[in-house]
Image (cartoon, rainbow, N blue to C red):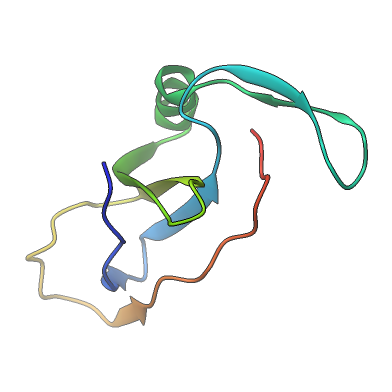
Length: 99
């Protein structure tokens, strides 16, 4: 998917996780530290996130070809109107975050 995340309104019992990781399994040496980095790939990332109650809501790539996973934990009913809400704006992520 190639789209930017929009702002999202979350209730107090919802949490959001935005991170970068290659969509395919990969192993590489980090350019800054020289240490080995790994990506589980999209299938295993989604499986690992689901195991702890996180659901990937979208994936996208930026102009630098960094692949993003946008996940949420908690109720996912976007039309719920009870309780205080927090509005989160997307933030720029750093390059090279492996999982």
